[in-house]
Length: 486
Image 1 (cartoon, rainbow, N blue to C red):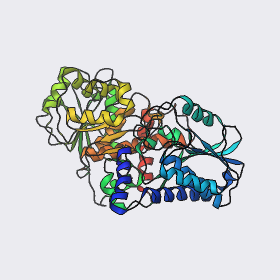
Image 2 (cartoon, one colour; image 1 turned 180 degrees about the vertical axis):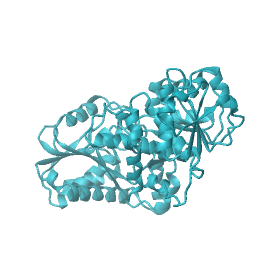
Image 3 (cartoon, rainbow, N blue to C red; image 1 turned 90 degrees about the horizontal axis):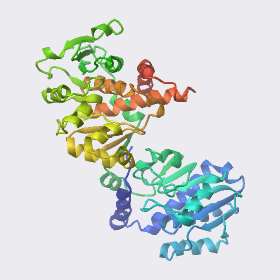
Image 4 (cartoon, rainbow, N blue to C red; image 1 turned 90 degrees about the vertical axis):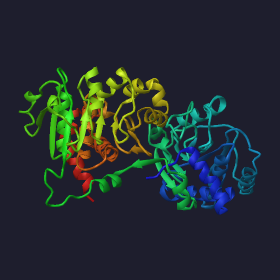
């Protein structure tokens, strides 16, 4: 699903007027009416429980809320109060909408009281560019403390729609009705806990305008996964499912390699070869399907369809030099291989490769703190792409894959926060990649499957604390079947 950063959405607004004569007044009227009708049709019982308070901000978002109030009044709701968050705006469109509301005698109140069943938030839109402080912060925090059912128009006021972080504070909406396209901040970091249920309303923007203006960021969903997990021929054989080489494991860390290999087998790899500096043969009775290779005997890596390098391998110069030897376009660089890069010299990698860091590993690679990375994950991925020249999968809530575009993976939760989960992810991606897929594509499907298993675990009533990486491997077949099934 296509999403839009705030600047892209602002460009859509401008171009809609300049090229299609969709004036701000037309867009405002359409947005307000669409939101009012959506609230009326989907949530009538909430509206009828008691009084409704509309929070009116100073800009176009505030004017949208005036239109919503007017249309709800026309639909028969006479239990509406209005509240100016920062006083009246002198903006012409705002004043026009205010006159229309006042002509209907919808009352304005001058103080907040905890007596409203429903609050409609129209304080700030996507243009907010500074922290919410002072009286506005008090208003938002006060409304959040009520038991009211809260709707936000376009964006929960105070939420940064690009990063998913509240800017000082933000409305915790039960429902957000956004216009045009979804915004990345609704899906990442703290965004989902402020956004609540998301409803997207196209208010008349032409599709070709959205397509050419918003091209940077997308949400990877089940339909994308199903399309990618295409049916095989009934005559498919192990060679067609590909050969994966997993270079992983060392003394005390053989489990990382084993988890990676098991996941690759489960996701459909035809052959899985396991290699390391030492011999992992003692683990073959547990997974007899694996083939052991000696790294010393591999003259070329190009005979494999994909390679995973790094889980539990050890941080040392040998690992760093190994990366320079790998003559293969389909490579996933993970864990100790990433840390070895950071320790012995960050350099440009094959542009087709994929690195799979969490924020701590990425911090060491690009020289900024993990906190800075988490403050703007897209910016951090862009910096990593520039420094290493390859595709980047940044793990976390939610995982983001950056190549030519950004993809937010629409699955996953904190059940994945255990040592070894990343080894399983690397194996899933490698297992998909060896089935004749570029690693950039395999990263999307692999990360979606990985997160889906965790979501299924929690949705079945199990504690998110209880899932282990081995559970990820064991539950992988069921996740694949769910994606494949219509």
